[in-house]
Amino acid sequence: MDWQIILYIAAGVAALAFLILCIAIAVVLFSVKKNLDHVAKTLDGVEGQIQGITRESTDLLHKTNRLAEDVQGKSAKLNSVVDAVQGIGQSMNNLNSSVDRVTNSITHNISQNEDKISQVVQWSNVAMEVADKWQMRQKRNSAFNTKYSTTAESDPENLPVAVNHSVTTNDNLDENRVNAGLDDERNK
Image (cartoon, one colour):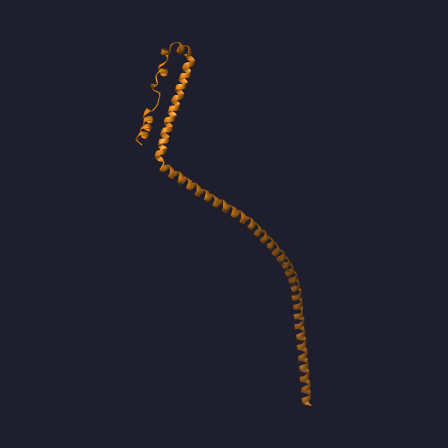
């Protein structure tokens, strides 16, 4: 009998330990359930926030795509402006090179024809002086004819010296220039 009581006591202790173990596991499981419920609620809140962030991210992506399309459109328009400016620059370079060629051609022709140009300038100066003298002489003659028309008709010997003589004094005609042009022509 002794062994039976010990067996019953051992069985009772084992049952009591199993009961304590079950109670401890139940307490732990209730605590875990409580934490899992709290985690589930937190995850529900996080899920709502993630859905909001997802919607905002989607909206932001759509806006970014529209902005990228707008930038691409404006960039394409700007490319045509840049191409036009580049074309203007090339045209200006072409114009500058054309002006340079014309200037070089003119300079070359002037340097080749320098003697001829100087003769033309001399002859034009002489021609202008002769024309000025001719006009002055015409003015003097017409002025004389209007003032002394009755005297000239009655006495041609009383005409002023400027009208009677072909060469006048102080008439500013540079005879050296005239002769220089003629001498150059005779020497050729």
